[in-house]
Length: 145
Image 1 (cartoon, helix red, strand yellow):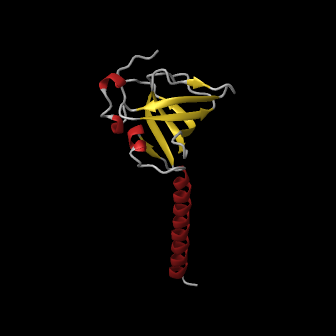
Image 2 (tube, one colour):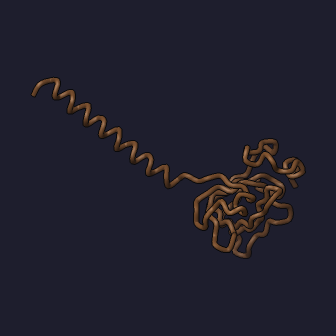
Image 3 (cartoon, rainbow, N blue to C red):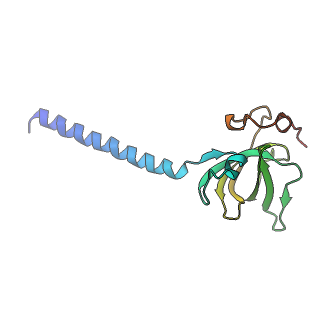
């Protein structure tokens, strides 16, 4: 076989390998992709039941309720325009508190409750995601308890 043919075969095999790796990476990322939504967007119907997403907002004052099992927590996430009940089973971050920002990964249930798989607490109360820019200033500057 000529050297020219060997190079062509090698280039074709390399191209197929790169294409295969790209397909595998895209399929892995598809399962991990989640859209960021605010409570107002959820109530406006921009989500579907069971759709993976991230819910971002503030923990409403007086809404944190620990369930008798000791690991389930229920609270209300708000963006100043709308509120969504959230249920989470697990240990919450140390910075998780009322009037504090949070982001939750999970899915909407048919009854309108967001079931979180993971809760993230914001560490800097001055930062707001661009999607939450219209939140009332009173909600943004609320002191932590």
